[in-house]
Amino acid sequence: MLLDALLPEFDASRTEHRIVPGDLEAVYRATREADFVRAWRESRAVRVMFALRAVGEQMVSRLARRPRAITAEPEHLRLGDLPRQGEWVLLGERAPTEIAFGVIGRFWAGETVWRQIDATQFASFDQRGFGKIACNFSLRPYGRRGTLVTYECRTHVTDARSRRGFMRYWRPLAPFIGVVMRAQLRVIEDQAGHESA
Image (cartoon, rainbow, N blue to C red; front, side):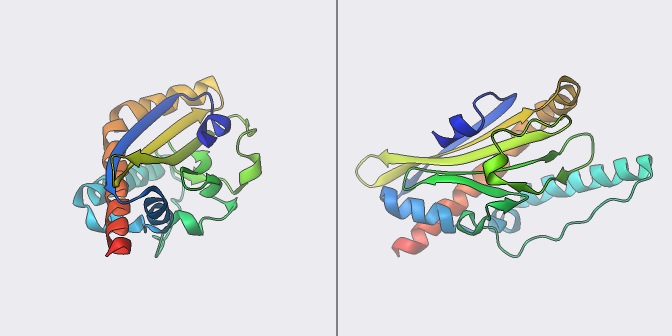
């Protein structure tokens, strides 16, 4: 998999699966075109989770007496639109079986700061104090008319001190991250249904 080349060693991982009606090519197109902002808009659990995280980050910013950067919610978030340079970037594709994307930043200890990166620099990045998140959707035929979509998210932190902080963050939040991933898989299934209608 592309994911194995991008982030072969990692500190934490989460994987979710969904069987989506439709052939491999159609479900791959749906994966590229699914608007993942819908996962936030249509899932109360996802909205509550992000609201709690925002409150936590606001409290940490106040205690540290630092301004908190407010980022606007994107109007749309589609893998097919991801740039090769920016914050969240497209890391690679092997149509119709895999699409990989990721980000580098600090996202524990009450502050989220993403770096501007180039996709070609992702695998070799090793600056201390940062974490790399690499994700993919991998697809394979399932039965006569279905596709098994697997969503994997891997995280690697670049130094031991930051890793300890990240693991304190990861352990309690991993189940909630699974909620977000499952919501995104539902968006893919819904997109595949619209495309086949």
